[in-house]
Length: 165
Image (cartoon, rainbow, N blue to C red; front, side):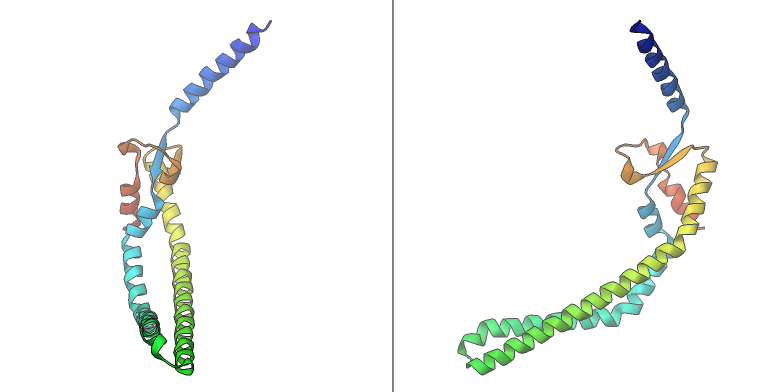
């Protein structure tokens, strides 16, 4: 009596293995393809141009804070208390300015990158669908979800070509 369920289980495993053997799977590194695309390179150049002034302000504030700190550490022991407090206050203000400018820049850049990704998403989806159909695949997985893939099943280069059209 106990052999029948084992025979049924074995038969089901054989059937499932044959079904898996017929499944064709491709792999793509979406991040690599998207960020290597011509649109992403153009976006990156535009972003650098648009925020070059803001980046310079952040660097200047950081450098000024560093100089104030060095001066405080070097000369602070020789200053009277009011001079030292004044210099420490200037340092704290410069650190606050740096943090504010850096946070504002990072936030604005992140918003622009998110907008780019949202704008690029339909094109990426269409290119992935083309890959699926052209290669007669049942499934395309992101490379982050895969431990190993045969080189011929890695479709990242083909995806990049489609994105650059």
